[in-house]
Length: 93
Image (cartoon, rainbow, N blue to C red; front, side):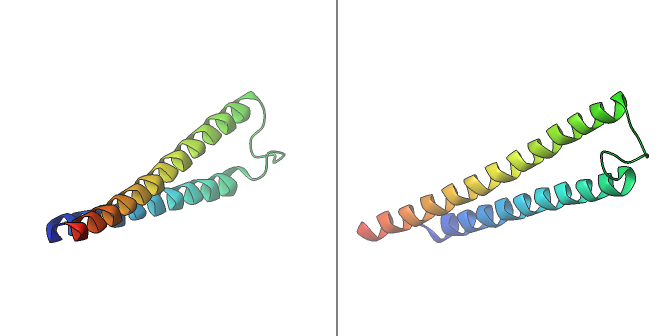
């Protein structure tokens, strides 16, 4: 495997790891902000149908962020395995 391809694979792995970490941090920040603004579901800050609608949408968005972070981690792992395999194949030649 050429040095340039190995560097590109390393860069891609690093960027995917950074992406996953930033998505996870964003999810934590959103959850923290939600808790600071709304308190618990039993809080007097906001109740009723609009709160339920917000909570449902918030949960879906948080799940989507988690799914994207998981996908980034899976892609990172796949790139890593492919780079290792390519390096092994190059040694055989």
